[in-house]
Length: 196
Figure 1 (cartoon, rainbow, N blue to C red):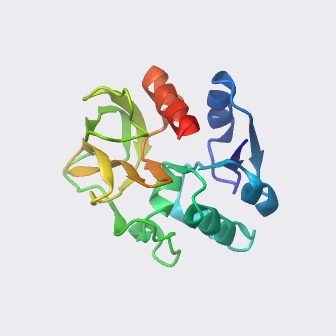
Figure 2: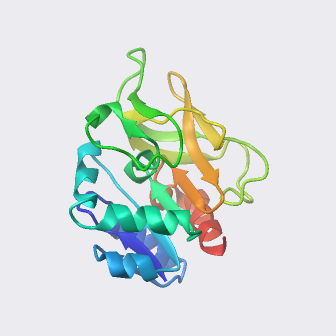
């Protein structure tokens, strides 16, 4: 069972539809007990970083950190991936999970923001999440803030600078793009997550 976390800022229907298409049992939930009991966790998200402020009062932040630290496969998508870092300049008073180092920042002024549309992945070898994903595969983005390239970056994308497209450490994964809107490449990535 995959728990797709509903905190009011997710692209929930399209994420659920993608897992339904793969034939994987899933549930959209805002209940900490359901999240805690799930075999896998997906934290989606679109919009402003401040939307993540509801995780604390809803009792979800603590549960998400607990399952991440105890080995449950965890996938953050777009805003959900940014939450995995220490925070974002978009809303500095909201703390991220701190599972990856660094702060998400606005794109440089030399490029149009938000970064919307298809862009390619520069993929490092050895990733479980990106198994069978070809170098320079295209995925679909929609975001104004970007995560830094860190040791755990397993794919990067160029847009004004190089930023983390995918991060991976043990059971915790993050993708800045929207796999549920990225065609066969995105479905393959979600399938790989289900097989971790």
